[in-house]
Image (cartoon, rainbow, N blue to C red; front, side, top):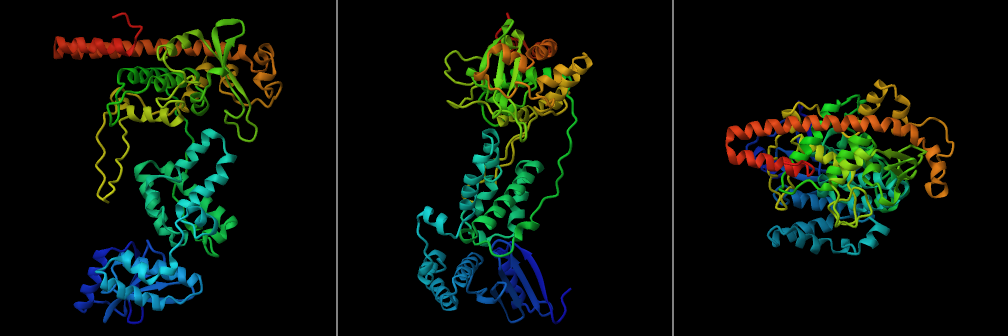
Length: 526
């Protein structure tokens, strides 16, 4: 509670209603104690001080507090512009008070046109339009920081991770600060963006955005202090999120995995558009279950990395270089024998007209299916939909369109692609093939042997020995057979249920149901 000698201080993103409230409190003699001070969380240092005799805007800096104008002279956007311009002048060693007076006069004569008034009062602040000049000399905006930080960071990352790394610094929530100078940011603004990201995506995505935001600011503060103008104190250290990633231990059953595959084939149109799931994405989902490989490397499998299996002419060996694999500081190349039964399944999704260099081509020419594409298909099967984009006119987003959760309807516990690795490992352990499971999953054994030799440097015979292809084949054969058998059972159950429902609806619905089944599985003779 305020005393006669203290201001009551609050921090929030100020708006026109706050200004109206302040004027009403002054007019009605309702200002408590000595007065109020409301700090704006959007423009760092800007504060509205409400005293019994009037409300005034101030800029509070570490070394000085400067009057900007009264609440009658400056709207909230006009006060933010005045604060930003005054800070720039103070940093350059200039006294902005005469320019602030000119700014207030120009606002009055221009009927509140902030851009025109700022041009008249602060013409010396006009920066070159050349973004390259600003990037070189500063002061940096948020967009400048992101581009320069990524330019320094991404070459050190694997290509598959590099695209994800950029995502977490370019969420739509960051757009509103894209043109802000870094010295205008504060923890409260970053927290608003963090919360918006969490609401639109997930806590784990928001946590990654927080970590990478801090990493970018740390990098600029250490190596680009002149351009970033972040000051002497790393104020963003207190920016954080209450999140701890748990250890996943979910093991989907064969029935759950197979039922998911059957549903993905039956319901090709999912989400907010009428665009069908692409054949490449469906094939990649099948391959995820059949091989239990990490989806980053799997989705980018190149056709020129596929070779015949020595001793098993109907099989293939899919190979990945050390750069393709996830393996910490010592990634190793990996090869996986793929049974003919799996190849027959995947052949159903081949497009004879494509000239893609990838085993799982994307709908976009020249690109391959990504981890995000596979995960997105699973999300759509679970009824998840992305939030609509915020309208450019600043209005409210459209509410999410309700979707059917096919997982829930068909008794499938939620799972993610990485969970298939536990499913395969558990199955092969039960079959006394745990060693084959570890080899298939590329678990490190501590032995380098010839594994570090690249494929092009060795014969297939040596490569087969180094990659333990026979051992892996002994595990792949029963696992693939079990997945396909489970799929046939689950598909038959779905077909019977659909036909029973169609019979109740009438002859035309029955024909539609059978047509859907035939389209789902081109090998189906019906």
